[in-house]
Length: 289
Length: 273
Ligand SMILES: Nc1ncnc2c1ncn2[C@@H]1O[C@H](COP(=O)(O)OP(=O)(O)OP(=O)(O)O)[C@@H](O)[C@H]1O
Ligand SMILES: [Mg+2]
Image (tube, rainbow over all chains, first blue to last red; front, top):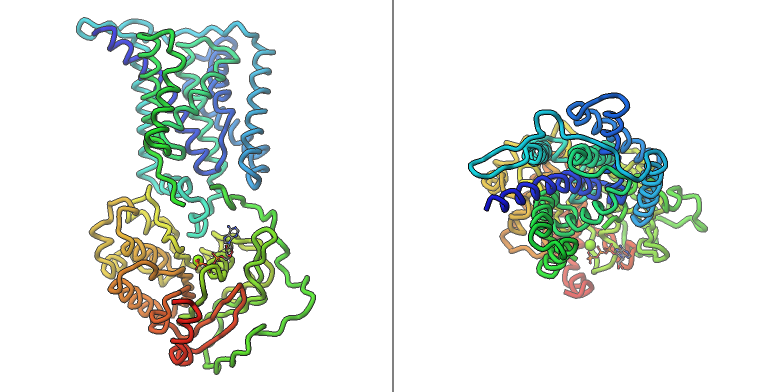
């Protein structure tokens, strides 16, 4: 039983990283119609920047948690302004390829600069230990990561449901053309939304830094899982991205714990099942012809 | 899914009229008697020489129509005649066009769809365009208020009590008729001066169609112009001042409401109803 709780917590913590990142992927897809392949690389960059800040500037985890998303927001703004924007008028495939190319560049650049062996990062002071709940010992950092990412998802959820900006983002996500025809300059929100989505990926990277090997390749597997998350949640559904993120984190953790040989495929089996039963994903709307 | 997301106008044909080989006479292709010109005042919307394409396929040819404030004008035509394309062109959503569209005397060629909406053009699409991810109230509050005559929310709720009752429901949980009300209420709350209504009566029960008629008359009384796409000839005759008959992308008839009523039977046959 205590093991089960431990795995559940680990799953939720990992799921929190997926949820945060998938949320970013979903708003970017919704508002721009761009499938951002570089989302995994941005997650990796978030972790790498945190590690570099610590090693070279002695900037610790808590500051990184704030600074890295801001830096990644700036990176996203540049990426949208300099690259993505120019291809928006074309087939969405062009931006998919662009962000794919960008991923290769980012991964290679990090490899060149920091090698392949992984950068060190430690669990922040105070969260290194175990917390005993009854007879169960839980990693304090996993609890923190889990609570923190769920809290961020909730905050983003409130932003989306309780503010005018959120209303505009939801409307633009659902039907960009119609939203423009109702007098809203959707284009004005494109850059900040893109930056915001990238910032969330970066934030997930910082959160993952103390628990994962920080390497140039850490985003490669991550993006594949993210795509599974988005398909399970329903493409374009914001709530779906969050719920599916947590779900995939759990399934992955149980897979690793109870069926290690199949751990790599359980997520995709789940995805296949969901798609068979509900082709538009758990929270996706049925496509109306 | 990603149609026309761009903010650029790539793929747009020239929006000037310069490329025409022959200066088309007004009311091309129609032997229709010009409607006796009552003093309709300044035209709010003027469309002239409008042609539209989807790729190589031309679906509108040299269309000329106009709407004055407080006037209800219908576009009647069979399926595929180009009615929706015409409305979308006016809204700035369909950009592969030639010809001129002016609103309150301003050429719209360079205006984006959102700028046109803020200038006072209100679009009620054929699928009603209600957001599932927004509540009924949010659907109403999403567009900016663009004119001092905009209906305050309170007035909207008084006029459409059902929207008040359901204000916290997701927009698409309403019935078809309620969604139609919501779509119309939304542009009234916005304060649009010209409404583009794309088949508002389609698929709705007679009492609701009647209610839509009442709303249109109310709007008209306020000096708002209405360009109404309708296949329901009987309904069109109860609300409209003038009618344009569109066939294969051309205006083939332009009738005052009396002529329109007199020829109702013929028009019904023509529309295949
Ligand atoms: N996206 C599109 N791509 C290509 N052709 C299109 C497209 N949309 C419409 N058409 C064609 O353009 C013509 C006009 O279509 P439009 O929708 O404007 O007609 P309509 O009069 O509104 O018809 P309906 O009464 O069925 O709504 C039709 O022949 C239609 O097949
Ligand atoms: Mg139509």
